Image (tube, rainbow, N blue to C red):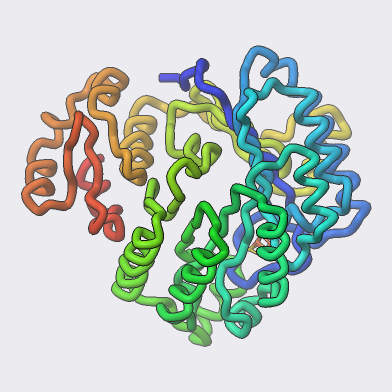
Length: 383
Ligand code: SF4
């Protein structure tokens, strides 16, 4: 089964530079220097040129520049990249254009550059307001940086701001997380993404854990924190539309919604980017030098391509749909996979309905709000 080619696509561009590696980071990021940035921009241009004909008859309605730290690249980089993107692909009028910024490298000049380039959504990597804790985990921003960032966005009346909040940093208390959430509510951000820290192998945090220098936060504490965040944000007028994402009405992230809708294609550009196009997943190389060389030599940036089988697609549909509060469209599921889930999973569904963990309304099956924190166990029952 392929993606729906009539749905507008999303475009992701990865900017793989950071001024310093955070202890918990498992993303592809390199320390920056101006020459590398210039080579990277040239390589992105080449990749765009190599793909624009292929996507000539497709339309896009979201752009997401993520990283790494997109706000760290030199002034003019994003403007230049945006011009190239807009002149190479077709975009709908109401295209959502997001850029991720780190408060430590976000300046007034860069902000105006982004706005001029067409950015209409800014995602601020706040993570946590506890400077000492941030420092302990290798993150460089200060409280002054954060305050300055929001002052600039507020004074300019920039309408669509997201903020990322990290949950589960060793040493982080529930009180400190709620303080961060309340600060963001006060800043009137329209969207809040809460990310649970995963301690990945090959990170500094993982080796600290192995040496017993830090303790992970327990599952019970995490559930407690998640439930408290949910309560605080609901009270402040945000609604949860995905397990970890909250928005004021009308401010859901159009781009991220494409990742949870397994029917929609997206194109990823740059090192470590991946794409999902017409039933195939493509993975670009994770090495910056390999990517730049491949582009110079007229080769592809893709190092792996796989077809998503119907069985995998079925599993993804269940997993991704149940992450959202909209839930799983049972009619569409039946049409696409020739399977009546109410029949094939009748016992599990009945049990979970009786326990009030899930609900079915207008043929959408969804997890009840109070059970999102244990969604994995529910999803497993339905796969
Ligand atoms: S700023 Fe983000 S991408 Fe860069 S090292 Fe830290 S967590 Fe990783």
